[in-house]
Image 1 (cartoon, rainbow, N blue to C red):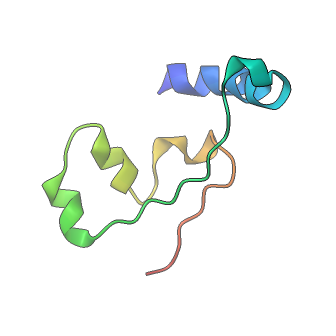
Image 2: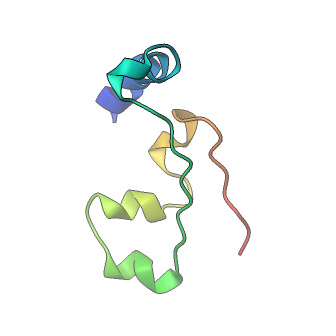
Length: 66
């Protein structure tokens, strides 16, 4: 988590100012179902979290109502 949090500002800078770096932002929507929480594990579990650690690191994170 610390590495990602510390790296994000530089990746953001590269995406905004250096197109030749090949880094870009991509809008992502994650759809989950209650049964997915138990069917997946490890790193993927964080994507299913209602409060992922990265919500304060990347811009425009929001949770849609169900």
